[in-house]
Length: 431
Image 1: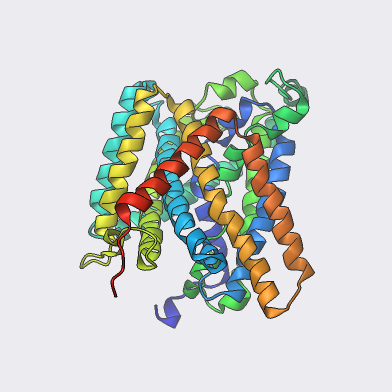
Image 2: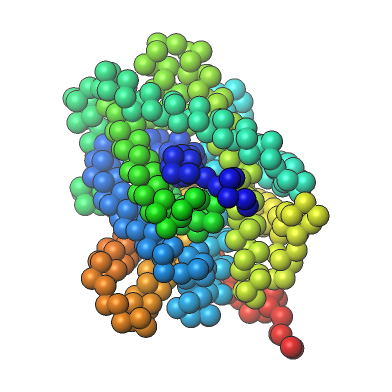
């Protein structure tokens, strides 16, 4: 990329905000409403942990040529790099399904049949293949559309997080405090995986520093500023909604920001417009994240950690064969969700939890890579020990918050992934 085409500080900040907030926030209020407004404590704790995880990738960007999670895990151990390649790529594939489901939740007002698990599954599969085929020839126009719609999406979140406070009822917020019927400790821990999903991608900017002007200076500044903007948007918008409506109302609304905008402006039309824009923006962002997943798979395949089919690129520079393989895998996962009879809320919760728990493996090893580098260079940085220690506690908390059934699902996926890797997908290098 030419120097004149690189992104400056403001552009980098917008890139971070749009990539983090684009699809991570829209389903949060509904998911959090199943616990109650006590999740403001959960959100604060997760935000603090995500900040320290962000700092790991900010620092790694200055210490490593390739600061991606897969590369950092490989630096710790090639075996861990191979495993992390699988976890990172397929964790993101599951996350891609969650993005589509979240977007379809906002379109349910126009297509009520989406609440049916079979119709939801068929629609999701159609979108997977439609976007995959569209991606085979590049996606410049769609990427531009995504930028526009994500901007409109953020406007709705900002309006809710500001004007919504004029309609905030402290008594209602208090009555929604803990609707789980369990103790405060359990309520605070529940849903950690959902909250962590909102911050998945904190590593994306640090690993793309070649796109930024003066990256040594601008990437750390943009990452921290962008992260703080997103954190404020998240906390403000989700908290105010919990003081605008009863928890049961939010739980039954797959489009909570459309609900808030309709209430703020006393206009059903405004709510419908927001439903369409946010739903379309989230679904369209699948294209970008899907291409990103294929790109990560190519990096892992180039290092010998994934099948060589992922290394292939077509004349348009797209990882076309990898995209098709990923589409097949996502289709199979969606069929499983259909067979489970998962509606919008259940399907989103399952996919998010599985995605986050898989992604936490490479996130954890990224921190260990910093400690190993410190030992090798003799730096003995106290700051490194602090950010790795706190981010590791943050990562472990997600596993603690998961239910036994969710943990068994992850263990099963890990066993299957490693078995397939060992038996079917690796090739012995003869050279």
